[in-house]
Amino acid sequence: MKKKILILMITMIVLFPWQVKAEENAYHSTNLEQALTEEGIEHDLSGYLETEDQAIIYLFRGKGCGYCRSFLTFLNSIVPEYGKYFRVVSYEVWQDEGNAPLLNGFSNTLKVEVEGVPFIIIGDKYFPGYANVYDDQIKKAIMDQYENKNKDNLIEEAMKNASSEGYINPSDETDSGDLYNTSKNESQLNTSAILWSLVFVTVGTSIILIVNYVQNKRVEEKLDYITLQLKKQKKANRKD
Image (cartoon, rainbow, N blue to C red; front, side):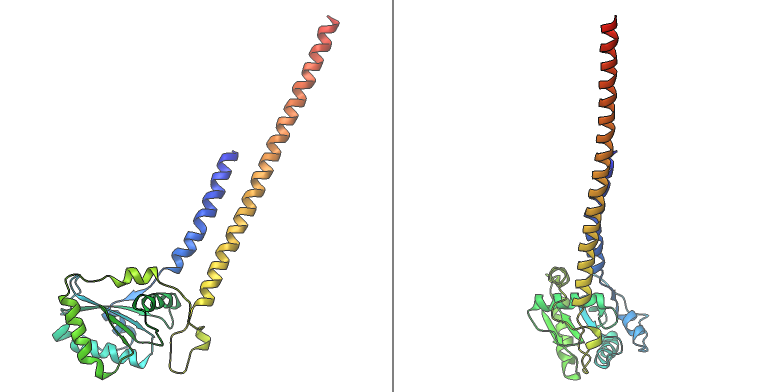
């Protein structure tokens, strides 16, 4: 019984922090069609297909951000000519605060300071914002990455480098719509994990101590009973 309780408590203690960590790392992405739909941009992607060979455009955006909408509108306009060369992995960071640390991961990976959205990454090229003057550069970056047979998987490195440091709380969002920081929320999650771990340790230790006390008490009672029986037996032997 004691071993089962001990194993149960250790399992709960070990698994709980990992469950919290898994929630922290649950990034939510959308593809081009989903992003266009979320921003209310009319589109017809019936002839557009996503494949593993296409260049990936990582787009960090804020829902309702005008520059982000302009960039998505631009991508929609070049689908007939360039659609077979690229696909979009979009992370919304204004309303989905869980995605913000991943943007910081890309910032750390590319060694560039991110000041706002949209932030666009295509291969080893990045665009801090969007304007029409970037159009030709973006097209070139798409083709360069598409033709690059040894594509770097930036997302894996970015996830390793993901952190919430350097951002501000959504309530302190700047007038320019810069990214907010989820450091406070991440800190609360970490604190919660630590507190729950302490609770589990405390409860588990208490249960084990109680079980030990009860078992020791039973052993003492059995010893007392055996001792008493031996004494009675000795007395009986003497009388005989």
